[in-house]
Image (cartoon, rainbow, N blue to C red):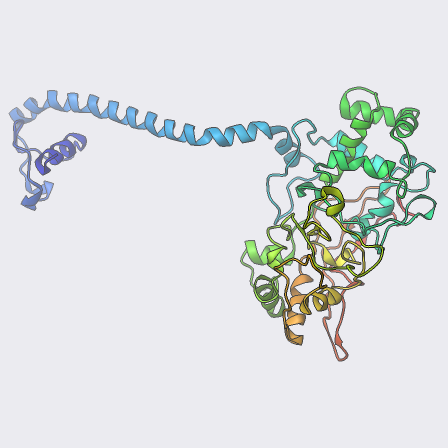
Length: 455
């Protein structure tokens, strides 16, 4: 299209443009005149132009309508995938928005993954909470889920290895349940994919609760208060193993915590949230210390499995994920744990062999535990004393000031726990050298029943 034609189109779209005559030759772009330099048309010229202006107005109206439809079509096509995803997860998202996890704590993924067939509801969370603290689920009525997942310890138990019924020792360290809703697999070896599948395994494990599903269902069915809660959660009083699993899984999904100093530093650009030492530690974490090779993303875990050589030389040897997959190369691999709330979850590693973060830093600084299947990303770090302190300072800033009510005992009338918003300062320096942080934390539970669901 030539330049004069372009000017004609522009003239038709702009009623403010002055015309020399009704049949005027389109103006060349090269004439360099402004519209104000052209003389106003005479009455006769204006009268002659009127039909053209009417036709142009109609044409412009059609063009605007066509353009609006086109834009809408593009937006609609772009919106379809999101619409489909939202529809599939509508119940889950609605639950995350309206229930005790509302709003999701700062720093976490805003879309909580929830199965469509087990949406979050207040009634189901309440039932799951009661079951979680209920010792009837164990064979001898002595322990509950909360015995090994105590709220005061970010839903761990503070032991190297757990203790089940009849004082039977567990095999692996108890992982935290905080933010477990984002996990892509469960247990240290990742042998199950969903919380619903995971929930029933401790009930029947001989070294944990040692019960049978039939006995659990019978026990709960005989309690009218339980049946009433099942009716509220599921629409009928029927107590089934699948409903027990759904309720426990739903309660665990409500255990979320964010809003750490790191979150405020990263997302709010608050330079004062970490401090100089922790900021240097963050750079080490992402660089020289090589932590981010495995501890990545909002949860500080790649959700994968790695061999770091922890307890490799000890007997009996725990082969980790290999025991589940039987796949060569999986020997000694364990799931990468989240680093959130580290200050509340000691002792560490799958066997609970490290009592402090200091021990962990020293372990990786020397290249972890040599063995034939050691992950290739692991190598000696050669961190200086100052660098170790900086790294510890950063790790101490990954614990949350919880803004949701994670704790509620069986008795709904008892005081619910809350977390102090005043952090405890950590002293990471000592004349004698590095100081561990296993016995201190930036927050404390207040008003909790210290013995609720725990011995």
